[in-house]
Length: 606
Image (tube, rainbow, N blue to C red):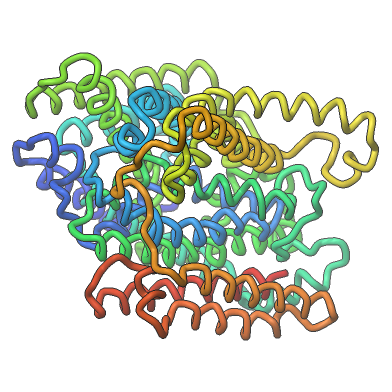
């Protein structure tokens, strides 16, 4: 790509890179205590929370992967973004009030209060393991794309050089500045990523051959056998079955947005509950740019590559850069801007994962089991060394376990590889927050058995699908990981309930649970939920009876928006724990807009 850069592109790229480096160094200049190093002093405002969440959530592997899956599979990949919204709403209205009342550094500390020290340790080890897997993936795709971004006869990064460079820069930022430097750089990176996605998507969709989003829909519907712009693929689809999307994917979204340390750490660091809630909701709005400016652009790229430029054999993970060089005009500094955005995106989620892992290692392992009376200086020092060790390990694994020539949809591979541990984690958090009757001793068996159940479900399905052909015809020859996640989640929920019931009977009732650790809502909490379900049931039946989904989308979206404009004090208490009416109204407005847009998309693109 370097050969495409003109003087103005180089100036833009250099200025933005210098801005990122300077901002990170400035934010990290101050000597920090433990709370400032790991939690930015709990001072983040809502816009910082939003930018930091988006930067932690969207990395280069996601930017490249989302457009690549849109290119190879279609618009159905948008479910990864759209169905994040229900999980974000749960985070805002259920988990944020509980977590922040506790005032914890880590979610494992919440588990210690709710379930005990053993559950805390198992969760910490599980999340550190998941982070390590994701770090290896981030270094692999980052190095691979760095080699494609900076590839000329005079200047080129090898796969190993790319890994070392990314690991070194990421390690330096976290060691030097901690959470404060991380948040500043993530906010700048988020602006660069969003604008880069919009630029590439806009120039792609506005091409004459495509004719905008409406033209892409017409083009897609006019080609027999294509239908790449639908959200819903058959239940036996190997990658994105609609039955898996509305089951296991919702569980995975629940993990990522409500029980995952490196994402939730941002709302724990917010100044107030309002800042945490509004920041999460704004991050959700930013995520909804991805389906239209990345995934839809990938669908358009499939038609442009084949029909306009007659390109064959473009790999999904290479589609973004190929498309950018074809549609973005040269000479206006836009290549430099997008290159800066893509380069920064290599580091964004790596930064956040390293910071979260160092927090878990320091607070939940070192302080709990090595040095309970550790000073702030000692904790910060351990946090920094843990970053160095974890980065070194991830870099070594990335080099020895992957090759830069591999193909396929790497984003889906990461989702599969990290999904074995997640159903049990989601189950214990949800039971712990919503019910006082769940016994503290029930969490550990569920956490231990969750990966075992995951493997067992896959083995059982393999045998059953050979014996019962209707299973193979309905869900495919191999069980999609989303279906497996949902089955294991249901098993974990039932297992924890049965264990709790047995222990409660045996010990004369459930032990007392601290009010800080469970959700408290008004008497009428169920009314808005029933309303929402009724709206969607009516909408689905209307589509089934022959009404166009595009027509149903508007009343369903309006009904969803009205759900968040409560008429009673009880409903306001359900949606925000703030006594301030102005705070409640602002949270309602953002949530209503976000929820209604989500419902509209789910109907309109069916």
